[in-house]
Length: 131
Image (cartoon, rainbow, N blue to C red; front, side, top):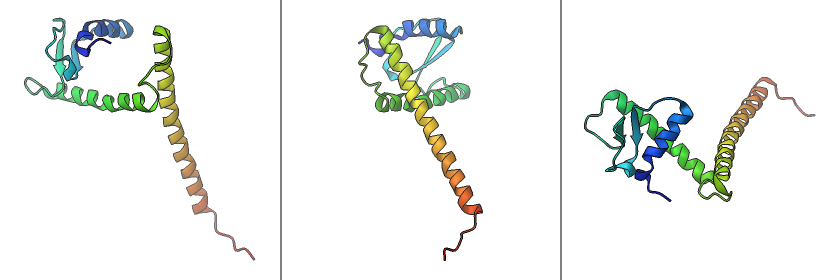
């Protein structure tokens, strides 16, 4: 399993290929500190204070908001260990974990909708006396 700092170049190349957008600024965590980064873009490390402008600070906060989601998906949707074989298995595991995460969001939304419907019925229907 390669160390985070050694994987930045290939990961950026894959990301650019998938999105079709050339990266200019990269926001990474402290695991990438001290490694030779490709010179065609600027690497911003979390916790960095010097030379950080307001737009870059906003981008870093946005990146920090995604990290807990990744952690929850790993912990709650079996991404901590992959039991499927090969690269195809890795992809299937990631897609199924994302589907499980989205399904959980949908179930929470449906539960809230059902609560609202029940609340609306109980507030509008007058209570009847049983004789």
